[in-house]
Amino acid sequence: MEIKNLNLKKDFNILVTGGAGFIGSNLCEAILKNGNKVRCLDNFATGKKENIQHLMSNPNFELIEGDIRNSEDCNEACKNMDYVLHQAALGSVPRSIKDPFTSNEVNVGGFLNMLIASRDNNIKRFVYAASSSTYGDSKNMPKVEDIIGKPLSPYAITKYVNELYADVFAKTYGMETIGLRYFNVFGRKQDPNGAYAAVIPKFVMQLMKHESPTINGDGSFSRDFTYIDNVIEMNIRAIVSNNVDAVNTVYNVAYGERTTLNQLVGLLKENLSVYDSEISNVEINYGPERTGDVPHSLASIDKAKELLNYDPNYNIEQGLKEAVHWYWENLK
Image 1 (cartoon, rainbow, N blue to C red):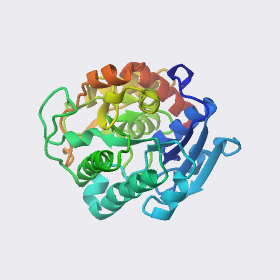
Image 2: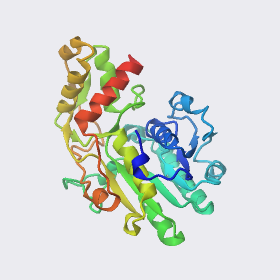
Image 3: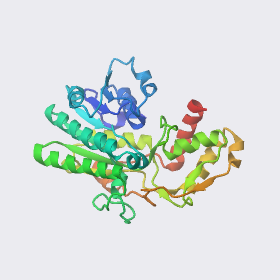
């Protein structure tokens, strides 16, 4: 993605935690293309070295192999940086249900370490990955930032605690923070493997192998699927905004449209059939609903549009076309 039209000054030094992960590596790449210096902090627990291998020869790119659970690593990573894009976390609701301790250790303890290191190194603004899981059992549709429910998983609790900590640090220490509640992000470099793989790359891989994907439930559950370039745009807008009303708050990062899982699979089959017509005949399996799953998710992006001038370019159809092409070229 080209971010030149978003007025990101080239003299900004930017730290991306979790920079070898799906979202983090895409951020690193886009910011480097703009001419900025980028430092990546990652312990490769879920991030992959191949995601950033092509960046290693760039003189403006620096990798620190470290863990956000280690306060010294956090402090070292923040030295001489202007902005932090904090993406490092242990994602996945099922993973947090299986192992709530580690999710809390990374997502809460690690987050606090990064806040302290950012404060101590005079970071200008701390932009962090929040989550739509914070809405929990709220039945309001679309989801509006100031109305949330009770969390439905340990993961959701950790991401809500992040917002509380950021708010306290802003009020207590005068830090500038912005939280970005991601809604089901997808796109290039998203890992299709492993027990906690996201639904889109997992289904793509299965369909490419002519294997039947399994939908949890009857396929009527819906999500606001959000293409990676929309997420990059929001992170950059969060850095460059000079609007005093835009900081020390949280935003939904989404497209603002709802797609059911049945519709999603239909779109995936349609896009993949361009490369392999047999995929259109692959049948779909249905299994039990997953514990902790929110039935429906749809974001209001009015606040982001008003305060950050957010203008997402990719809807689900456009994003899937791009993503499927990348998967076909890179993972087949």
